[in-house]
Length: 439
Image 1 (spheres, rainbow, N blue to C red):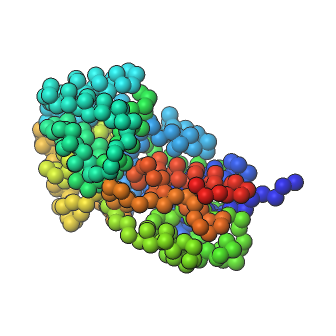
Image 2: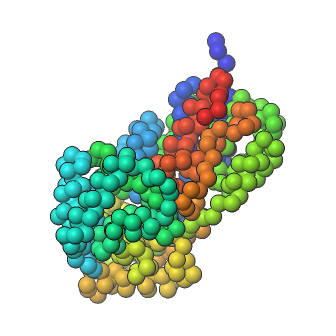
Image 3: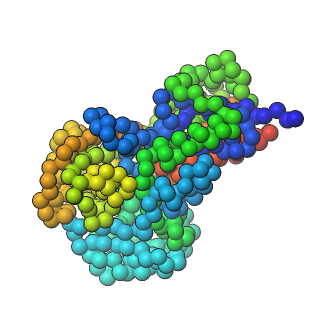
């Protein structure tokens, strides 16, 4: 009988969980180390203070898209039914405070996008034709730019102005890359457009969790890992990985380091072979994400589960508001999303709520009752800042048997759940090889 490959996964976020699930499904003996008391990393469930009656919410309002194939596959693998846990919505961008609306019909690609752009409300005919030409250019170059630049430079170059820029391209950039268009990588943005708009019709759909994030993946993944004879060690911080892949004296055949870049760097710095990767990661900068949960009287219901508040985040503090009552949560509970660095990050929760409340009133053009309670959840280092030509490490490291996972290793993607999951799967598959080779 062949000896099972013994693999340590350091980090219990979505990248580490994806790696552990992939390893367990392939017969490896997995031990997962997580420093926190719960799994999920930067996409986890939380209990709101002073609201013990409320179901668990999340540390941020997360949104998936139909193109997240690996996330959907792993959810199914661990028994988390995407059709039950995610609400599938056709891409429908609504800004009720303006005349703008863009809806993609359920037609084959690229017909759905062409009709959606041409029929968009609140945009001039020249804007619509210009957007169609822009997408045809991207299709013609197979979504590969000659050189990276900022999203702002790319949009300027292709004369993308007006309401389609303000309410489509720039909000999509901010939502996907969590980096302002004037700083964001155009190539990574184009990659996202390819996956979300340029492949199959279902890829364009928005998938909004109808349960807390723990139930969407981390808890079913933990059950799957244990069912495949793996072990999960919570509250277990790894301070050193020895040259021979020992952790706390225990020897492993492979180690997958699946920590956020700022936490991975100190462990990589301990070995001469991986110092260069540590130095690369040490130069990363980060972007915050804020979520303000506000509980209104249960009668309050938005005209659509997700509404836009501002085109590019400059005229409004909030970018989006989600009606949690329409997404399996408590009626009247709203979640406001604040992305990337901006003026919002300097304000306290009371001022933020008052401002967002006013923005929602302006969008809906009516007076609203005051919120019964609210809470701000602020992730200071929610994502790496996705800048042009940002150097990204691969899963392979020069230290034999040590592999990396984390959204920053998924070179074609920004810091998203799908990027984290893909990175974990890639690291696991390399680790499973008997004689790993350089990528």
